[in-house]
Image 1 (cartoon, rainbow, N blue to C red):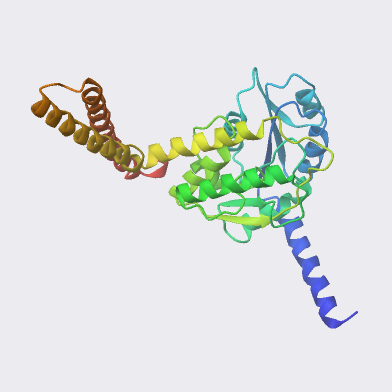
Image 2: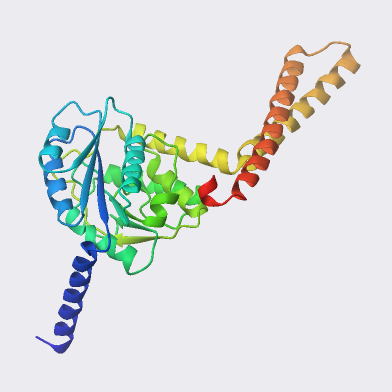
Length: 323
């Protein structure tokens, strides 16, 4: 074996050792949280693997009608139950709240469908402890993955939309395999209850000044159906969340531009209807109604944009924990 090969193997061993030490340091409390909905086939392995690298494992059973909660409890996980299916975002809210109540130093989230390898938790923890990032994201496109082509295409579309909506410099915006620092645990506040939560967290994190990095991870899809959602429905839910966020954070763009456009169209139509009336002494009812409607909508949207812009500006002047 060459000297270069020996050095390379030594470097890999050192990295693995650092990751192992970081993952279970006694002075760093790590909580692994798993949102789960009807995942009785995979939850056991995930809880067992996660417990090797976390001090506490939390499973949020989002209204499952199978044995997901019972299996997790038998394996020592702390189980939070929802009486009905409320969505991934609602489950993640409970994950963050549990981490705050446990005074966790790092929160690791991973999906309950088995696509993430919990043995890679040390990689994300290491990125928080060693690199100083607030959020470490397991990037499925940099590691080995057998992700189906339709999911890859859908994720790429959502990644592009998320990056354009908020300037998020992340390749895999839809990955649910993440680690959050203590600062991120307390500053991460989101409203989405559904599948759009992953995008919203990154958009709000950027505005809150939190830093994010990506860590290559593998992903397991072969032999299992890893989503209970229709891909089109998933795409629609995420896009709806992003649109809602843009409307909230950029009201002048979201409401103001359409408002001005509607006002201009209404004015042009009103002038045209007035000219027709002066020349022909006959009022074009259709044009007049559309012009008035456009003007009313345009003025209301413009006023709403100005009011929301003032409110958002005032809120952003407040300290993060006071919002």
